[in-house]
Structure formats: structure tokens, C-alpha cells
Image (cartoon, rainbow, N blue to C red; front, side, top):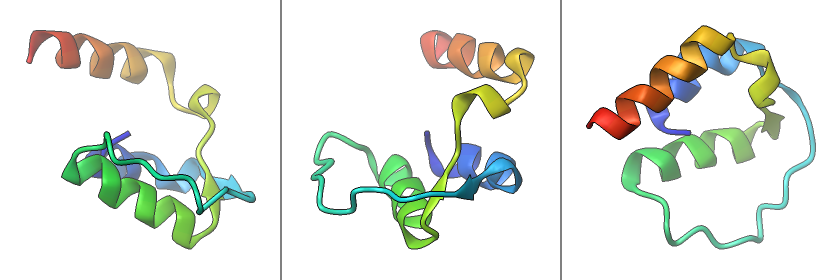
Length: 65
């Protein structure tokens, strides 16, 4: 999840415990910013909450880009 996705869907997040000690060195800058926002909550954004058509659109864009 990148920062744009978090901004778009954060209203669907629910409180939850996250492991903030895990290192995520493979994330890009936008993905790391989203993770920081999620951990600050702490929030959980379950993929099932995002409308399927939007998830499909994001996946297609990732492969086209």
C-alpha cells in the first residue's frame, strides 16, 4: 500500500495492534510513508474492506506502469 492508497481508504481502517519492530527496508518512499501512518494509529486496513473494483484497478495499474 502506498501513501495515495492510505489517504483514499484510511476511513475504512479499524484500530488494531501492529508490530512496529519489523523492518521494511524493501518499501519505497510512498509505501514507507503509508506504513508510518498505519503504525502511528495503530491501524489495520484489511484488504477486504477496499471495494474489489478499486483493488482490481490498482493491480492493473501496477502492472501497466
